[in-house]
Length: 325
Image (cartoon, one colour):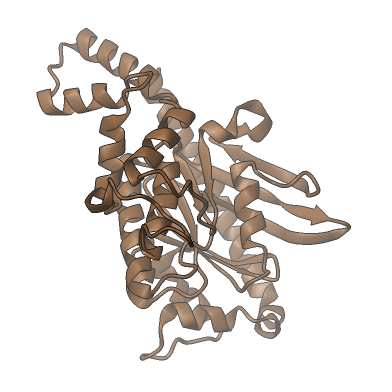
């Protein structure tokens, strides 16, 4: 799945984010970096189709070539807030099952029917265990236990499945467990595009690493697209991401593979010291003074990257259409 975004968001005559263009491919997890107030939350909400009505979007946001008004983005994309809001009296398993039933099976049942039809036509005998798992995942109605157990396992919540969530007045989950539960509530549904906003708020680096590691496994195994906003990730957490989007003053400074970002800034005249964290280095070079000084080089790079992303989206869209033909 590819997501292409291009446009800007305006509120009361002022632009919150603008000059944002790029794409997010399937099976990749993207890190969104930027200082507080640079427009990260507005950007993620715009991608998920959850912008406040007081905000005006100029430009286009497309999913595989389809605009947001041509389908229901809530069934495809999920926005995960930095705030944990749960029902304190419910257990972890009850919370996830409740969330799964509200979100529904989505397109899994239709996909399973098409897979069975093609297997029967070509005489393919599927693996019994995999076949049973896929059928269990695509059952409509109340049979969501298999999906719930799977999500609890990959998010590390299986050990506290029957523990009440709790709140300030009731003892329950720890801060890291509640943050993982917030993420699990959304990924238990059929969404294939996940936008996570400051999920490290109130967590230590170890808990953040565990959550991002779970998200990385999820993206690579389910072929979902994930954009994760973090303020200052540790080096170990930073290395888990495939792509990086660096924002400053509502603009995109860099968008591309993580492995190429140091070469890009080296070409702009900035070299990361050997003993310095790359994430810390990126947070320093995106300051307003440096951004203004090198805006011409950055803009030229973004124009080249835009052409590459658009070409990638078109190429993969054609491949998908050929497979479905």
